[in-house]
Image (cartoon, rainbow, N blue to C red; front, side, top):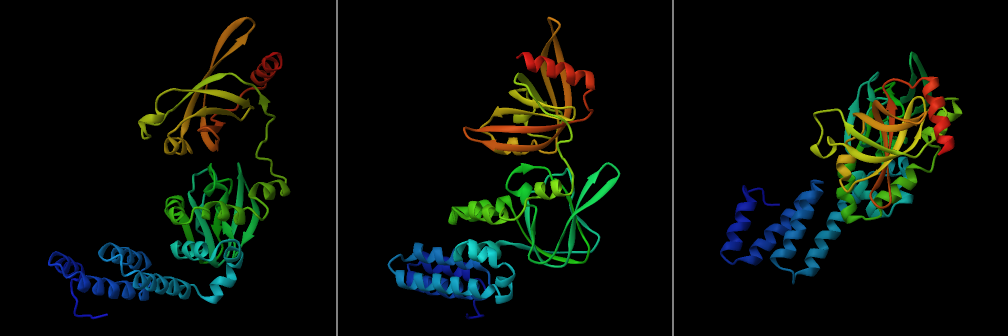
Length: 339
């Protein structure tokens, strides 16, 4: 690369404006190689695409640039890194795996640092390159160890592939070197690799899930009996800092209820607004027929999970701010039994 080129973009524009397309093509060609060698693959691919716009007849040279970029990408991932993450390189196509690991953002975190917090949202999938951390489940004043994690382990998948708050907390034991990808970055990758998301989820789900590990530890997240009870409900967000689309009252269908929470279904085409329900306070209202009279029930709680279903339908899992009394649950159970 000629280091005397101080403003290559300006020079390219000048060549193109004066009809010197071959000179512009030659300069872009050199810049594409230069960017690839520097491991700036986004820039290299941008220059590659521009070559096609300038002169699509030079297909052999454009293909050559693409091969150079792919070769440099492969060299950017060391053999040790490939061995550490072998199950991903075996479970994904070569292009998918390379694109995924080059897209990971790197982060070094000190020891005794909490990365994930139980009950809080998370949209990142983490890859541990070096160091150790622990997964913890907090139950009131108790802190229970779920699992130790080290290099080659992945965490955060239970929230990354669904819309839930964290089931556990993750805290470093030693300084940890991580790579991570968030949902927005994965969505960008999927435009070039449509099967990447489903293949990645399959690999991350191949081991025992967090929920299985919780059960193995004798931890039951559903501490109370759930009563199947279908009735119309309305809900709305109680926060003024959320999107207008979700601040209005929305009609839904109650699915089940317990002393500690409930689940309801509703339809929406606004996926992002639904995703933003996570971690927010919600008010729910519905009516019960008690001794021949209609009684209005108003409950509040925090959304701990949202699952998507076909036909733009979502199930929302709400944890009550205050648990229902035994008598209230007995009444609901009796009404549900007659329904």
